[in-house]
Picture 1 (tube, rainbow, N blue to C red):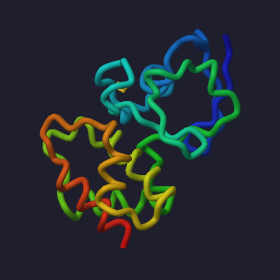
Picture 2: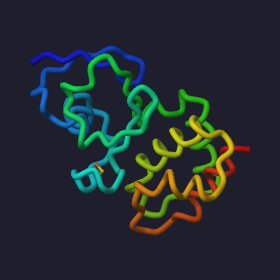
Picture 3: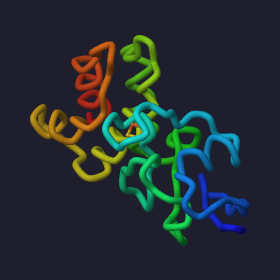
Length: 150
Ligand code: FES
């Protein structure tokens, strides 16, 4: 089935089963490997993308349900002012350790700053709690979000 998507500000047509998770359409069909597979069960946040500006788990979203919503992935997050600030802070503070979770972390952090331009530590911890980092870089993640917010 042919499905129309708007990904990173570009309209695209993909031939895919509508039940295929958006994560795999992005990675396999659209060759956007920045969005990562972690658990495949909506629990780790590695696959986070923005759907009309809202952070969602792309492993849980059938591509056929996306409709006309605009998808933003890590490859284009810096086109959003909050994303640009987050990426700059991430680099400045050398946040990642192994780096596997960072695309999802950055997408969630961008969403957070777009909702809440000046978050407190409790807000950051609450809104980022769905993104797991096996290397436990949580303190640097929090610091980077605070820096990006200033
Ligand atoms: Fe989607 Fe873990 S891979 S939440």
